[in-house]
Image 1 (spheres, rainbow, N blue to C red):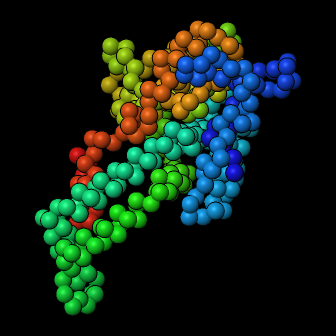
Image 2 (image 1 turned 90 degrees about the horizontal axis):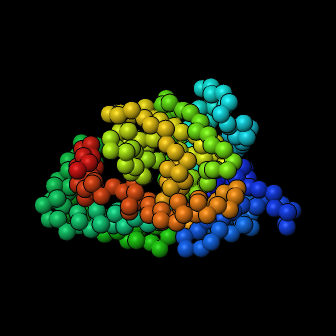
Image 3 (image 1 turned 60 degrees about the vertical axis):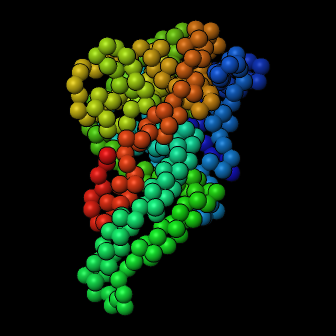
Length: 337
């Protein structure tokens, strides 16, 4: 089943009328290649098995339907009207918050990050498996919990018991399809998540003219932080201090959401070039636009592929996951290192 990572309606916003095919087409920008004029909004970001669930063959179609009904269709009712004169209200902000959250998480870039997540799980389990002192503490904690629950024990839980349990978890999380399982679970979790910081933040529309348009990448929700020295850092977490969120919705309009997070400096409206640079940085492979522009191509080319979610952006290397796992097993609130 071909699943759309970027909604067709959103892609069509960037399409032009091609006189040769007599249909809507996109100019496709790609690393190391000249712009190509025949990308179809119907297929440009459709991927076979993207939302497939290894544990449930019916889940893929269910997810597609829910994405359409709960997130795409309500925003499609007004997406064409998002321009300089757009009228904001609480309901539109609510709908766009969910739309942007899911659009970030449904991308191929986010799915690729699940492979890194799966690797981190295994490393945390392996670290605990080889730590004799922590195994003993976990065994003692398990014994204590079982006694408190009134379970009759013929012997205490041992390090060997804990090690065997961890071994089974390592095997379970080492399946070839573990990354896809992780991705589907994360996507379903985010469908029920409400980003109150973004919803309660400041929203505006950045506009431009048709001769200097925005492009849209195959991972179109981008984040950045501007330093006091006017340097831009892409792929900052949605809850990070000073983060800003962007989504181009047409060649001449881009949503700029400023979440309600800690801010230590004044927000500066970004330029079209800065937004387009971020689109290329986040893109897995392509950016799409309404025109063939050597100037745009020159902006995009150096940025393509510079952000890989989970590795060079949105990574969690600062967290000691072996410690987090140990804290959970010990019945403590996990501590991020």
